[in-house]
Image (tube, rainbow, N blue to C red):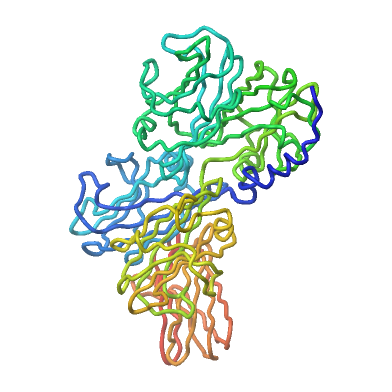
Length: 614
């Protein structure tokens, strides 16, 4: 036994992997649909494509969305959210036509439309967006609405899974995570009660109950009773996604395998924790070999949380375990106490439901502010601790248009874009679609805040095709690797995409990335006769009221009107604009849901814009 004041270890943990997650994660969820004809059932041959983003708040009662389509055969005649898995057709769940403006879709779903059943299907990837035209009445392009997440897998490893079964008390728990780009499979496995040292560990290709060939040797990643590292699963990706991969751990006593566990892709929100003494905030008396891993699964109705954890090398028996609220290197209060009956030797397994699974607990867990603390008699304040992190990626969205260029550019082009960043901040998934560009010469991510220009961070040019840009910016990029510093710039709303054309060499359209839930569309300068005004209408769509901000370069008397589709004036107000900022609040309570025309008129001109009442 020895007593260690692990100051240096704590500092190292802060500087490296643990802290790379801190302050990076929010409680929101980003979903996206990459739309094309190939996803239609049957498939449609077309160059048309689209991108829709869906941003869900942490209370799961507001879903903001935006979509841009391009290269369509004609005007959009219908667009709907349907219920079905990829490759199947399903019934309409939400009619999105009221939110359409040209080839663009923007709005917010709330209330009864955003039911718990709808949210559950959203997380499960059981909804798709279908866009119709006259030429393709059943749908021209379609996109499955998928969560921006890395796939987590909790693996239970024991002798009974061996073929033939091995009778022993050994077991292990592993957490595997497949990155969104499918090129990296990371893992943390802790074993306990083995008959001897691990002599080998491998991934095999076979379904449960059958033996299969080795596809990946994990032996080099073994350190005592822990197996930790990452591999490229490209050569056996189909087996991994098809639940046909298992981990086998070998010992001298059982050279064919002492314990085994199947890797399975399951429909949950996944979290995990890697436990050690370095994350404790007080002195630890121990063996120097303490370790642990935990895997957590939250169902899509957010009412049941399963947890499984395995420890090894502790100074003695586990005397207690709790989930605490606190960030990295911060002690916090217990929020969920694990019953003693859920602790079996060095294994902890149980379920959290009811009042214990409070929204505050879930929200803190999504933000990386929950940790698992395991206590022993020698360390009553905690012997090993692990911060709990989600596999859901952090999302950013942006609208793309000429109004965001500095100086502004008058252009009919506009688009929709998104970025998601993994919890370890090792890469960004980016997608964007732009409609009505005058051409294309280049596109980049630049570094600066809205309204200011900055240098190029990363080139997007090679991935442009037919108005769309899709790809990954990874830490393995040979020329410009993605780093934590890159992620920090996104976090500070200091990254924008700039699309260049021959007509506008400095940029025709630009999109400022943000993780704000519902981004307004920046407006360009309009001519109100001999007066120049810049307008912003928000929120739009709206329910009870909306706000119209007007920046004018001169004083002028105006009338502001809301006109319905029949041409009737529903609301009006005289407004004298002053040189500078002006604001008008427009009440909507007495208006029926639907599309309206908002007009600003003076004696020499008029400016119109669309207004949607939910």
